[in-house]
Image 1: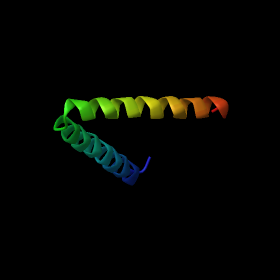
Image 2 (image 1 turned 60 degrees about the vertical axis):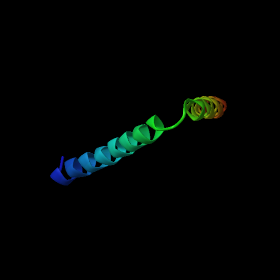
Image 3 (image 1 turned 90 degrees about the horizontal axis):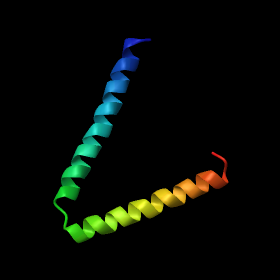
Image 4 (image 1 turned 180 degrees about the vertical axis):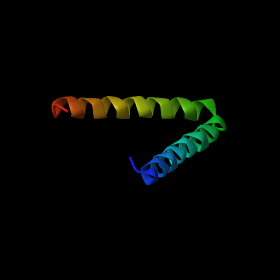
Length: 58
């Protein structure tokens, strides 16, 4: 395995971790009502994607 692959992997991991951190900080400052709405929307989206994947045999 070449060394530049390791650096790419570390860079991509850093990008994902940064996005997760900033999203968590942003969500922490929201009202509880908005957090509940976001939770419901995420459950509906996850269920819909799961159903589409089940129908497509993925």
